[in-house]
Length: 490
RNA sequence: GCCCUCAUCGUCUAGGGGACUAGGACGUAAGCCUUUCAAGCUUAAGACCGGAGUUCGAAUCUCCGUGAGGGCACCA
Image 1 (spheres, chains in turn orange, blue):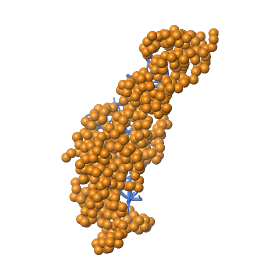
Image 2 (spheres, protein in one colour):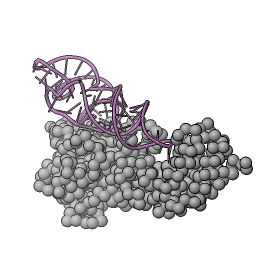
Image 3 (cartoon, rainbow, N blue to C red):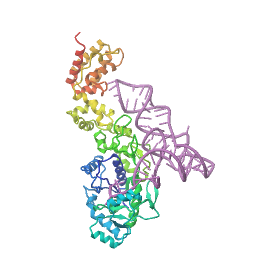
Image 4 (cartoon, protein in one colour):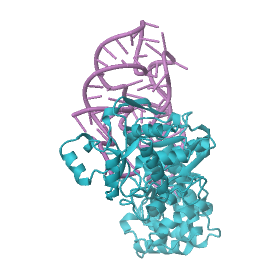
């Protein structure tokens, strides 16, 4: 049997990173077995549908490279892939269940339901229309009374849900009532839609969060009523909020130890400057282990080893600090040019006019310092903004006394003004010599620190030589001249 | 309240009766290196939720607690 998995989000909000995680696992499984990965939009709750959410879902999957073989945009032999476009199908099968005695029309009004709930009727519904006489049903229908179609859940016994990760999970049937399959507006509930679609689309493994485990008995009984073979159920563990309680959600914004906002929406990861392949690598390490004590791997490598059966069933938190670590590894592998191009948009967003060639000069030195693209900002700001001229007291110290400092800056100024080849190696060599020569220690450090402050306005920056080359000869000389002026005339 | 799931270092995890002195990774700390900050290298601290049982032997199997999470809609 071919493996066919699906990702079936509701367009009720923007893509959540936990959804990406679930989609990734379904995708990896399909790819491992050479099967298909299907995208289906579950938009039957029209009241909660958010405009733009569907687009965001597709865009996010594309950004991550989680490609689907069938879906709303690409079509496929089992379409349509949007549930609101499959209405007749659900109606047809709901009616089939009614005709075959597995479901019935229920005319209970919202008021009646509310009253039952108030009276403490279990599940808020007492199955009052389950065995309603056929002629009475016809009568009510003739009167145009609105109704829903409810499933006849078994009244006694047990239902066993075979779960790939948890084994057989047994539920007593007295814990259920007759659930609505088709709403009065003609649209299906999740229970009907998911079973009909998964069957018709020949899905082999259904992956979803554990929050669905408790309703899986409905689905198991539905498959039975239809006489269909159920797919393999895979109830994935929840992703918890890293700090605080409950599952990871936007509603309870959490913060990391370092005080940063915990990212929840997929597009927040893009905006923060993470690489999609790094995020996927990170997610793949949660609830699944690549093996061989190896945590950095490509999705191609993951596909070779992945199997849903190996996924952990324990709830988990996302280890965000590992994302930073992994992302920094991926950044270090980038070519300077590509890195510069990747960083550029983040600088442009800050209003800087970016020259990628100029930026590229800094990248070999910078790549090792970035956990994510946005980290580049403080390191390269000196290229785009005037730096304050440091006060005199910042330009010398014990290891570099005032006269020596002045002398060193003079020499540096002359050297940079006249050196033929304005490249990192050449100026580095020259400036090192100047630094060493003018200090009581045998290190250039004391001088280079002051020079860094003059060039970048900061105590922390990429290596100064790179900074000077990237800034360019004239701007660098100007900044040194301004510093020199602080020493006054002598 | 009822039902379901889960439980190894701070975090993500390996392990599935003896190979466990419980392994790896991130993070943390220290040292080295050094042009600041990083990176890199070396080292360190750090865990089987508790209690019963099964067994010659339990992190591993069973039960009971406890804790955490989830579900009980004409929402998904």
